[in-house]
Every structure is written in structure tokens, then in C-alpha cells.
Length: 159
Image (cartoon, rainbow, N blue to C red; front, side, top):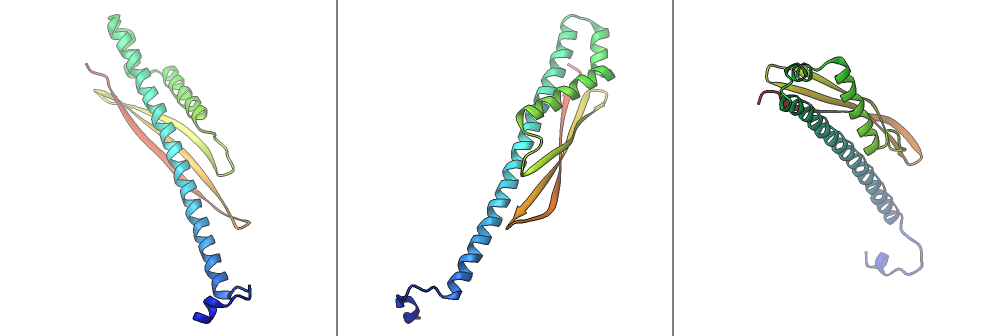
């Protein structure tokens, strides 16, 4: 062992080459994993911010209707008409698109949508999306990893 350490001929033992290669491969996998996690967190945060905007929009609409004592307008907001639903969904999708790119070299975000369910005392909304991560390592394209994003929120309609 002493001879290997003190050998100053400039050549490198094969064991050292394999150890260096293993370290580089492990670091590549760790960095890839970190990239996927960071992208997932960014996309989830964009969904959360837009769900907060949807909740604020519903709150503003129902509060405005109650403040004006316009019961019919309030009931229309509470029961969520199809046009109102469509406007909320379009606003949600546009907001997500502004916060994160839908297509990059690392992932593609598709099937963004939001569903609403009305209960007696609250409105529940579920935001969904599908992220497909593209894995390209060591010059090879690996099978993509798909991950569904699903976040829920509620808004109370009784005050």
C-alpha cells in the first residue's frame, strides 16, 4: 500500500479510476433527483398560490353579493353556474402558466384542471395536473416519470 501511495510515476491505478467514476455517477443521480424534487416543489407552489387566488375570488364574489343584500346573486355564486366555473378554471390555468413554464427540457406539465363540488355549507375545489419528467443521463433518454399533482381547498358559504 505504501508503494502505491508513494509511487510518483504519474500513472493512476485502475481502482482509483473506478472509484472516481462511481463518485461521478452517484453525484449525477443525486443532482437529477434534486432537480426533479425542486421542479415538483415549484409546480406544487404555483398550484397552491393559484388555489389561494381561486378561494379569494370566490370569497370576494360571495361577500360582495351578501354586502349588497342581493340574495339571488349570492345564490348564483354559491351554486356556481357553469359560466362562473369556466371563468374560475380559466383564471386558474392562466395563473399556473404565468408562474411555471408548461414545457422545459426537464418536464412537461399537462392536463391542468380544477373541479368544484358544492356541499351544504362549503365549496370544495380540487386542482389536478400531470407532470412528465424527462430523464436524460449519460447520453441516454430513460423512460419518463409521470407524477400527478392533486391539491384540494374549501370555501365556506355560510357566514
